[in-house]
Image (cartoon, rainbow, N blue to C red; front, side, top):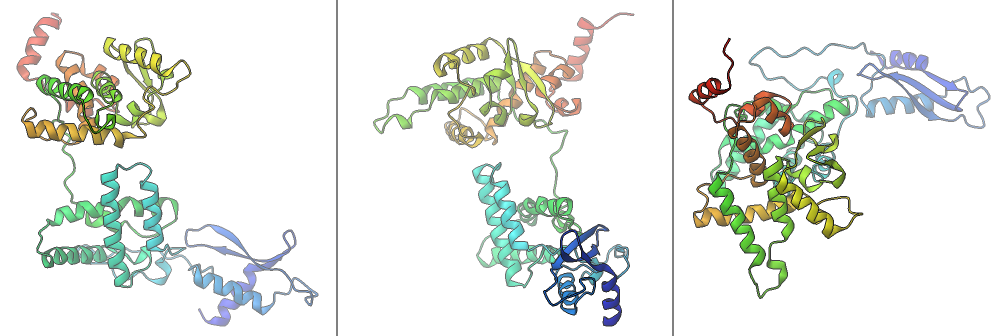
Length: 411
């Protein structure tokens, strides 16, 4: 379209809005939505406000050029490249309606994730963001739409070469696993900020091995549970000359016992409130449920004893059962220290990791071993499907036959 043709078309979309008193341009963005842009008020020398001054039209043209909004070019559907061919640079009509600064978006994403991630995970995310953003800046990549799958692959090649230069080795799959931490950043831009491209991180890291739903989650044996409780008791009572801060607080033992006997996740346990308990049941509200559904689990005698003692210690006005920990990371750090020492001493045969969640796994596994029906355990655990709970089932075909002979019905 020639310049004068664009000017004539823009005159038709620029008008004086008597309601606001502004010259206004009505445009249609690449997402198909209409919006109004205020360009300025008429000057004192403008007798007829319905006559649009040239400087106002120029202002509207500059705004459209800066924000990549073209109101007079018809919408063209994006055609995917043939299979096996890398897509070329984005054409002008396929650029996003508003270019998103890459560094600003990554920093905003980091601040958002800092509210929920554990310290070690947040530290890893910080490292990935710093290295990826630094590489992009050195290569002149400033906006999110400039990051394509080819760019991501080039970054991974640079990372491999950099590790080799420093005399270190790292697997490509490990680098992809680190980089996949940024995938959600592009997903949010696509969902909430009208980003028009695809997710380049997910396109490259799609082949990462996911967790096998048929694998059996780690759980503690009765001997390992006894060793854990013994280590906690020792660190609660040991006399240290360095001061009371070296002793393990009582609330750590209480949280471990509660998680082993209720199957609560660590976030729900840390934020556990007295008003969640009703006699022999504990109801987890939506905001602390991973499935975003209310579910209930049991309160046995051990848990009831802890709740009564905590109520007596904290007073009748207390709301939280465990007000001491500021978040799940407080519990994780202490259990991490205990687990490492137990593995080192040989009382635990393996380092299972995610120690707070292993307590939940143990609860589910032991309930199934005790003969509680799979469907009932799934409800106690707050799982959205029985298939998730079935991963914890350790029974064999022989066990099923013996159970059917005892509990089955003869027809």
